Amino acid sequence: YSLRGLRKNNSVEEAELCFPQLLNTSCKKHMLPHPEAVLTYTLMSSVSLLTVSLNLLVIISISHFRQLHTPTNLLLLSLAVSDLLVGLIVMPFQILLTEPCWLLGDLVCVLCFFLGFITVPASTVNMLLISVDRYVAICDPLHYPTKFTPKTVQVYVFVCWGCAVVYSFMILFDNLKQPGRYNSCYGECVINITGVVHIVISFIIPISSIIILYMRVFVVAVSQARSMRSHIAAVKLQRSVTVTVKKSELKAARTLGVVVAVFLMCYCPYYCISLSGSELIMASSTNSFINFLLLLNSCLNPGIYALLYPWFRKSVKIIVTLQILQPHSCQTNIL
Image (cartoon, rainbow, N blue to C red; front, side, top):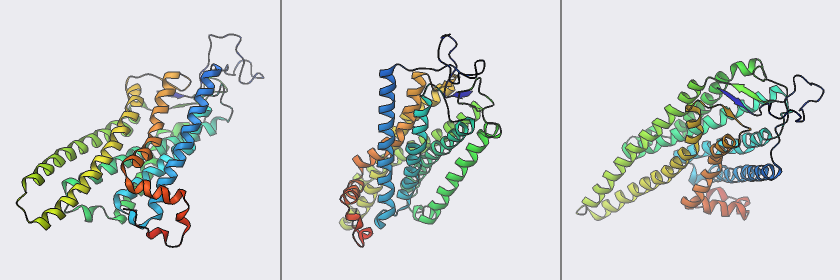
């Protein structure tokens, strides 16, 4: 199917042309009503700025404070980087697509989509890695310290981003080889991709894996909770240590489960449109909202951290009050 930034409007004969000097080949301007345009620009610009700011706080927090250098937090760091790039690159690109005409040329159009197809799939793969991390931590706790060390997580993250770059290059190869080949007129931003491949690789496989892993985590978490309640007669000290460890793992699983649930709610409508076979035309109000909802996930993730992670709230307070500039602030007790 085709992803269209702007489409030619043949129903308005006297509409202004994007390039008046090109009478026969120029697209006609697709004008949004002024109130709708102002609301769209204001909302998307605000969300883009908020996305960049919040994810930057997550990146600074996890990178600076040594106590936060855990394998799970390194995966959250990678997710925050992908979300930051979405707010910094993809969201402004979506704002440009709401303009009446695309004026930045065919190459810039394809490159913007290329970057988008790196960052958004990278977020999906990071979510999958987080799900695997929680699955191993809950279902196979004895082997977790050896399977998810900081070094192995760095390798996983590197592979994640490498796969996202290769995927973006492969799916947009024809568009990168000849930018603008699918445009029907000048002033249009259109790419063409193989819909089935895109849906299977970037949605069906990772989302199915995430759901299956979290269903397994939920079942094991429930059984562990029942097991902890049944071992009342155990040694008090041993019991308290075991319960503390298990509770911390279960709490982390619940928190990241919320992140995954919000992720699914934001991503599913976009791919349901794709599965229906509809053409994704960015100038359409419905599809613009669907794309905005998908990108909104990058802004919601750090908001979830702020609500559910005490360490994030404490680190943000230290950063905002500039205490982070003090000597040895990286050793501050955050947890």
